[in-house]
Image (cartoon, rainbow, N blue to C red; front, side, top):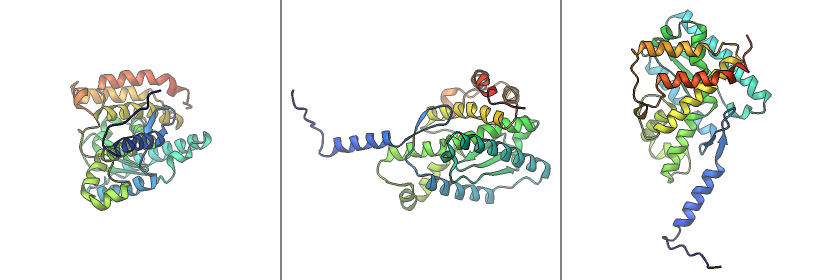
Length: 274
Protein backbone atom coordinates (compact mmCIF):
# COMPACT_ATOMS: atom_id res chain seq x y z
CA UNK A 1 0.00 0.00 0.00
CA UNK A 2 1.34 3.40 -0.97
CA UNK A 3 2.10 5.60 1.99
CA UNK A 4 0.05 8.77 2.14
CA UNK A 5 2.04 12.01 2.38
CA UNK A 6 0.47 15.33 3.38
CA UNK A 7 2.17 18.26 1.66
CA UNK A 8 0.42 21.08 3.47
CA UNK A 9 2.12 23.49 5.83
CA UNK A 10 3.51 21.89 9.00
CA UNK A 11 0.82 21.54 11.60
CA UNK A 12 -2.04 22.51 9.29
CA UNK A 13 -3.37 18.98 8.90
CA UNK A 14 -3.11 18.42 12.64
CA UNK A 15 -5.03 21.63 13.32
CA UNK A 16 -7.77 20.70 10.87
CA UNK A 17 -8.01 17.19 12.30
CA UNK A 18 -8.13 18.58 15.84
CA UNK A 19 -10.84 21.08 14.89
CA UNK A 20 -12.90 18.40 13.15
CA UNK A 21 -12.53 16.08 16.10
CA UNK A 22 -13.51 18.84 18.52
CA UNK A 23 -16.65 19.65 16.53
CA UNK A 24 -17.68 15.98 16.39
CA UNK A 25 -17.03 15.59 20.11
CA UNK A 26 -18.79 18.80 21.07
CA UNK A 27 -22.18 17.91 19.64
CA UNK A 28 -25.41 17.57 21.59
CA UNK A 29 -28.92 16.52 20.63
CA UNK A 30 -32.03 18.69 20.78
CA UNK A 31 -34.84 17.05 22.80
CA UNK A 32 -37.77 15.61 20.82
CA UNK A 33 -36.47 16.67 17.40
CA UNK A 34 -33.22 14.68 17.67
CA UNK A 35 -31.27 17.27 15.66
CA UNK A 36 -27.54 17.29 16.33
CA UNK A 37 -26.09 20.69 17.21
CA UNK A 38 -22.66 22.18 17.85
CA UNK A 39 -21.98 22.92 21.53
CA UNK A 40 -18.63 24.52 22.31
CA UNK A 41 -19.73 26.93 25.03
CA UNK A 42 -20.20 25.84 28.64
CA UNK A 43 -23.71 26.44 29.96
CA UNK A 44 -22.31 28.33 32.94
CA UNK A 45 -20.51 30.76 30.61
CA UNK A 46 -23.39 31.32 28.22
CA UNK A 47 -25.89 31.76 31.05
CA UNK A 48 -23.70 34.24 32.89
CA UNK A 49 -23.40 36.37 29.74
CA UNK A 50 -27.13 36.04 29.06
CA UNK A 51 -28.18 37.03 32.58
CA UNK A 52 -25.89 40.06 32.48
CA UNK A 53 -27.24 41.26 29.13
CA UNK A 54 -30.83 40.61 30.21
CA UNK A 55 -30.41 42.76 33.32
CA UNK A 56 -28.80 45.47 31.21
CA UNK A 57 -31.72 45.39 28.78
CA UNK A 58 -34.27 45.72 31.58
CA UNK A 59 -32.42 48.73 32.99
CA UNK A 60 -32.48 50.45 29.61
CA UNK A 61 -36.12 49.69 28.74
CA UNK A 62 -39.39 50.55 30.45
CA UNK A 63 -41.40 47.71 31.95
CA UNK A 64 -45.15 47.79 31.42
CA UNK A 65 -47.22 49.32 34.23
CA UNK A 66 -50.27 47.26 33.26
CA UNK A 67 -50.51 44.91 36.24
CA UNK A 68 -53.07 42.56 34.65
CA UNK A 69 -51.08 42.04 31.43
CA UNK A 70 -47.81 41.66 33.33
CA UNK A 71 -49.36 39.06 35.62
CA UNK A 72 -50.67 37.13 32.60
CA UNK A 73 -47.22 37.00 30.99
CA UNK A 74 -45.63 35.76 34.22
CA UNK A 75 -48.41 33.25 34.87
CA UNK A 76 -48.30 31.66 31.40
CA UNK A 77 -44.50 31.64 31.43
CA UNK A 78 -44.30 29.90 34.79
CA UNK A 79 -46.98 27.40 33.81
CA UNK A 80 -45.25 26.33 30.59
CA UNK A 81 -41.79 26.36 32.20
CA UNK A 82 -43.03 24.11 35.02
CA UNK A 83 -44.61 21.70 32.52
CA UNK A 84 -41.41 21.56 30.50
CA UNK A 85 -39.29 20.99 33.60
CA UNK A 86 -41.56 18.12 34.62
CA UNK A 87 -41.44 16.54 31.17
CA UNK A 88 -37.65 16.78 30.90
CA UNK A 89 -37.23 15.39 34.41
CA UNK A 90 -39.47 12.41 33.69
CA UNK A 91 -37.50 11.66 30.53
CA UNK A 92 -33.99 12.00 31.94
CA UNK A 93 -33.22 15.31 30.22
CA UNK A 94 -33.07 17.73 33.15
CA UNK A 95 -29.50 18.62 32.19
CA UNK A 96 -30.94 20.66 29.29
CA UNK A 97 -32.15 23.29 31.73
CA UNK A 98 -29.50 23.01 34.43
CA UNK A 99 -28.61 26.49 35.69
CA UNK A 100 -31.76 28.08 34.23
CA UNK A 101 -33.28 31.01 36.11
CA UNK A 102 -36.67 31.57 34.48
CA UNK A 103 -37.80 35.17 34.27
CA UNK A 104 -40.71 36.66 32.35
CA UNK A 105 -41.12 40.40 31.81
CA UNK A 106 -43.42 42.64 29.78
CA UNK A 107 -41.76 45.69 28.24
CA UNK A 108 -43.68 48.80 27.17
CA UNK A 109 -42.89 48.78 23.45
CA UNK A 110 -45.28 48.89 20.47
CA UNK A 111 -43.16 46.43 18.47
CA UNK A 112 -45.00 43.11 17.98
CA UNK A 113 -42.16 40.98 19.30
CA UNK A 114 -40.92 38.63 22.02
CA UNK A 115 -37.64 36.82 22.64
CA UNK A 116 -35.83 34.55 25.06
CA UNK A 117 -32.16 34.59 26.04
CA UNK A 118 -30.29 31.45 27.16
CA UNK A 119 -31.10 30.33 30.67
CA UNK A 120 -34.82 31.13 30.39
CA UNK A 121 -34.83 34.95 30.26
CA UNK A 122 -38.00 35.96 28.38
CA UNK A 123 -39.25 39.37 27.26
CA UNK A 124 -42.63 40.16 25.71
CA UNK A 125 -43.36 43.55 24.13
CA UNK A 126 -46.78 45.08 24.72
CA UNK A 127 -47.13 45.42 20.94
CA UNK A 128 -47.63 41.68 20.50
CA UNK A 129 -50.49 41.38 22.99
CA UNK A 130 -53.26 42.57 20.63
CA UNK A 131 -52.23 39.77 18.24
CA UNK A 132 -52.13 37.22 21.07
CA UNK A 133 -55.63 38.37 22.15
CA UNK A 134 -55.86 35.99 25.11
CA UNK A 135 -54.02 33.49 27.32
CA UNK A 136 -53.85 30.88 24.55
CA UNK A 137 -52.27 33.38 22.18
CA UNK A 138 -49.69 34.27 24.79
CA UNK A 139 -49.01 30.55 25.27
CA UNK A 140 -48.28 30.18 21.54
CA UNK A 141 -45.56 32.82 21.72
CA UNK A 142 -44.34 31.75 25.16
CA UNK A 143 -43.99 28.10 24.12
CA UNK A 144 -41.99 29.17 21.08
CA UNK A 145 -39.63 31.37 23.11
CA UNK A 146 -39.13 28.78 25.85
CA UNK A 147 -38.35 26.28 23.08
CA UNK A 148 -35.47 28.50 21.91
CA UNK A 149 -33.99 28.30 25.42
CA UNK A 150 -34.51 24.56 25.92
CA UNK A 151 -33.09 23.80 22.46
CA UNK A 152 -30.14 26.06 23.32
CA UNK A 153 -30.27 27.90 20.02
CA UNK A 154 -28.38 30.89 21.44
CA UNK A 155 -25.56 28.66 22.67
CA UNK A 156 -25.45 26.88 19.32
CA UNK A 157 -25.13 30.10 17.37
CA UNK A 158 -22.45 31.33 19.78
CA UNK A 159 -20.59 28.05 19.26
CA UNK A 160 -20.76 28.52 15.50
CA UNK A 161 -19.18 31.95 15.88
CA UNK A 162 -16.43 30.55 18.09
CA UNK A 163 -15.78 27.67 15.68
CA UNK A 164 -15.33 30.23 12.91
CA UNK A 165 -12.79 32.10 15.02
CA UNK A 166 -10.78 29.02 16.17
CA UNK A 167 -8.44 31.35 17.96
CA UNK A 168 -10.07 31.76 21.35
CA UNK A 169 -10.44 28.80 23.65
CA UNK A 170 -13.32 30.02 25.78
CA UNK A 171 -16.08 32.59 25.88
CA UNK A 172 -14.42 34.05 28.96
CA UNK A 173 -11.25 34.71 26.95
CA UNK A 174 -13.26 36.34 24.17
CA UNK A 175 -14.98 38.62 26.67
CA UNK A 176 -11.67 39.64 28.21
CA UNK A 177 -9.98 40.32 24.87
CA UNK A 178 -12.87 41.85 22.90
CA UNK A 179 -15.78 42.59 25.25
CA UNK A 180 -17.82 44.83 22.93
CA UNK A 181 -17.41 42.56 19.91
CA UNK A 182 -18.35 39.55 22.00
CA UNK A 183 -21.47 41.30 23.29
CA UNK A 184 -22.52 42.13 19.72
CA UNK A 185 -22.00 38.51 18.69
CA UNK A 186 -24.05 37.44 21.70
CA UNK A 187 -26.92 39.75 20.77
CA UNK A 188 -27.04 38.18 17.31
CA UNK A 189 -26.73 34.69 18.79
CA UNK A 190 -29.50 35.36 21.32
CA UNK A 191 -31.84 36.81 18.70
CA UNK A 192 -31.90 40.29 20.22
CA UNK A 193 -31.39 43.36 18.03
CA UNK A 194 -29.91 42.66 14.62
CA UNK A 195 -32.22 40.69 12.35
CA UNK A 196 -29.80 39.87 9.55
CA UNK A 197 -26.44 38.13 9.68
CA UNK A 198 -24.26 35.27 8.45
CA UNK A 199 -26.34 32.61 10.19
CA UNK A 200 -29.56 33.07 8.21
CA UNK A 201 -30.05 29.41 7.20
CA UNK A 202 -29.45 28.23 10.76
CA UNK A 203 -31.80 30.87 12.10
CA UNK A 204 -34.64 29.62 9.91
CA UNK A 205 -33.87 26.10 11.12
CA UNK A 206 -34.03 27.34 14.69
CA UNK A 207 -37.31 29.14 14.13
CA UNK A 208 -38.98 26.09 12.62
CA UNK A 209 -37.61 23.88 15.39
CA UNK A 210 -38.88 26.32 18.02
CA UNK A 211 -42.30 26.30 16.37
CA UNK A 212 -42.43 22.50 16.58
CA UNK A 213 -41.19 22.33 20.17
CA UNK A 214 -43.32 25.29 21.17
CA UNK A 215 -46.50 23.48 20.12
CA UNK A 216 -45.48 20.48 22.20
CA UNK A 217 -44.56 22.59 25.23
CA UNK A 218 -47.81 24.56 25.24
CA UNK A 219 -49.73 21.27 24.80
CA UNK A 220 -47.95 19.70 27.78
CA UNK A 221 -48.99 22.75 29.82
CA UNK A 222 -52.64 22.24 28.82
CA UNK A 223 -52.98 24.86 26.07
CA UNK A 224 -54.63 23.92 22.77
CA UNK A 225 -51.79 23.86 20.19
CA UNK A 226 -54.19 24.44 17.30
CA UNK A 227 -54.55 28.06 18.45
CA UNK A 228 -51.09 28.65 16.99
CA UNK A 229 -52.63 28.59 13.51
CA UNK A 230 -55.06 31.41 14.24
CA UNK A 231 -52.29 33.39 15.96
CA UNK A 232 -50.09 33.32 12.86
CA UNK A 233 -53.06 34.06 10.64
CA UNK A 234 -53.62 37.21 12.69
CA UNK A 235 -49.94 38.02 12.39
CA UNK A 236 -50.20 37.68 8.60
CA UNK A 237 -53.27 39.92 8.54
CA UNK A 238 -51.51 42.53 10.65
CA UNK A 239 -48.65 42.65 8.14
CA UNK A 240 -51.16 43.09 5.33
CA UNK A 241 -50.13 39.80 3.78
CA UNK A 242 -46.66 41.16 3.07
CA UNK A 243 -43.82 38.76 3.85
CA UNK A 244 -40.12 39.46 3.91
CA UNK A 245 -38.55 37.12 1.30
CA UNK A 246 -37.23 34.05 3.11
CA UNK A 247 -33.72 34.42 1.72
CA UNK A 248 -33.52 37.82 3.47
CA UNK A 249 -35.26 36.80 6.67
CA UNK A 250 -34.23 34.88 9.75
CA UNK A 251 -37.84 33.74 10.09
CA UNK A 252 -39.98 31.56 7.81
CA UNK A 253 -42.65 33.45 5.86
CA UNK A 254 -46.09 33.50 7.46
CA UNK A 255 -47.43 31.14 4.79
CA UNK A 256 -44.58 28.65 5.24
CA UNK A 257 -44.85 28.88 9.00
CA UNK A 258 -48.58 28.13 9.05
CA UNK A 259 -48.07 25.17 6.71
CA UNK A 260 -45.30 23.82 8.95
CA UNK A 261 -47.39 24.29 12.09
CA UNK A 262 -50.28 22.39 10.57
CA UNK A 263 -47.95 19.48 9.88
CA UNK A 264 -46.67 19.60 13.49
CA UNK A 265 -50.13 19.54 15.11
CA UNK A 266 -50.69 15.73 15.11
CA UNK A 267 -47.47 15.28 17.10
CA UNK A 268 -48.34 18.10 19.51
CA UNK A 269 -51.80 16.71 20.20
CA UNK A 270 -50.20 13.51 21.48
CA UNK A 271 -49.05 15.60 24.48
CA UNK A 272 -52.24 17.62 24.91
CA UNK A 273 -54.46 17.21 27.94
CA UNK A 274 -57.10 19.84 28.60
